[in-house]
Length: 148
Image 1 (cartoon, rainbow, N blue to C red):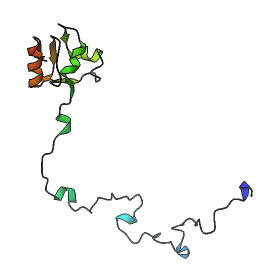
Image 2 (image 1 turned 180 degrees about the horizontal axis):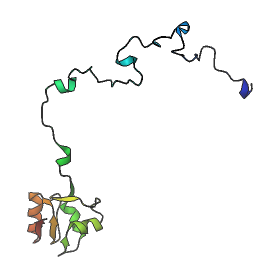
Image 3 (image 1 turned 120 degrees about the horizontal axis):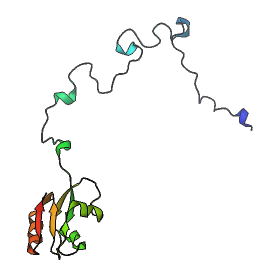
Image 4 (image 1 turned 30 degrees about the vertical axis):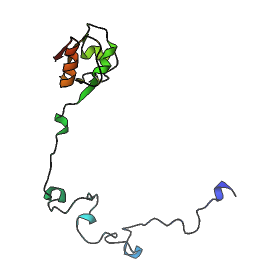
């Protein structure tokens, strides 16, 4: 066996369909596209969901339930109270400090402090949002929770 002698198995390949080469070829005239209509034209491609100009199904069916607008939703980076124990006592914790410490990854992230865990330090915490339990735990240690 030589590379130049390799052939596909018998019946594995077919000849290319040559359309529009005269009536004697069997695919002359309309080239197998039928007569007239959108699909007979060159360059025609109709999306699978197109219903011929009829009002599409997705627009005919009634819409139910809440439809949130995702681009208006504010996404907060959530930090628990127990995470703030890494900072020294009497320190002002702000978004820049949290970013430097590697707790917050995103550059202009909105930060929300949640009350999970215990806080052992007296801190002045500045963030965009606080949960009620987080405020209680910060103030119980003599610190302050300030909304930016």
